[in-house]
Structures are given as structure tokens and as C-alpha cells.
Image 1 (tube, rainbow, N blue to C red):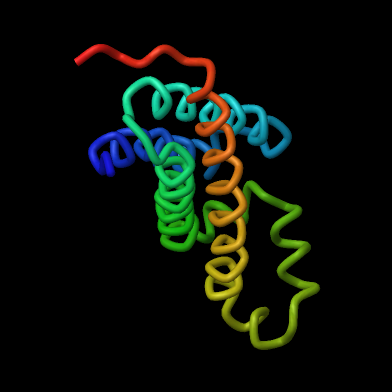
Image 2 (image 1 turned 180 degrees about the horizontal axis):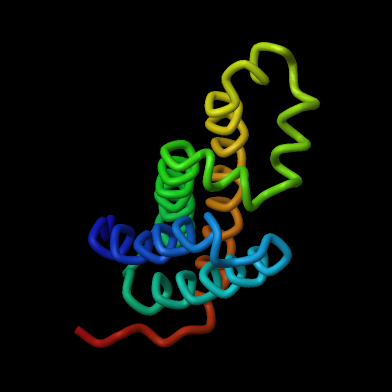
Length: 135
């Protein structure tokens, strides 16, 4: 496992997490995430010598960690710029309405797994087309 490349690529997730707090509008977030995922898959395919899917999956979880940490710690800033999330929180069960950060953690866990599966798939596919970096 190339933990160094997973950590280095996860910095894009941290930057994106900070950017989504108030700089990047909600409607453009998916485009930015897609670009990050495709670039990350290309780098994984170029640098890693195997286990491309696993590298991508773990990167998705690392990105989710940064996103969750940032959004939970800066919840008020996040919710002020994400009206859809505020509306969704109000439709949750009472226990989650009382503790919205816990609800966010639970939802983001599934987002992390989903994005990990997507990056893993992209990485696996990219490994079939990308020439490896020579040592």
C-alpha cells in the first residue's frame, strides 16, 4: 500500500472540504469532486504498482474524513451556506434534529464509502490505460 500517495491526494479532499464551507457554491461542488476523483485515479494508476481499487477506496475514506471533520467542526459556517442541508436536517428524526452533527457524521460515512467505491473504480479503469511511472 502506498500510504504516502493516499495522504498526499487526500489533501485535495481537505482543500475541497474547506472550499465547500463558503467559497464553492453547492451547484458546482459535484463538478469539483469529479475533477478531483478523476485526477486522483490517474495519479494512483500512474504511481501505484497494484491494488488500484483499494488505493482509490481508501482515498475516498480519507477525503470523507477531512470533509466530515471540517463540516462538523465548522458546522454553523457550513449550514449557513448550504440551505438544502439545513432543510434536510429538519426532516430527520428528533434525535438527529437535536444533534445535527451526529446525523452529519452518519450521512457522511455513506458518502465516504460511495466516493471510495467511485474513486476505486476510476483507479482500476485508469490502471488499464495509463503507462506506469518508471522507477
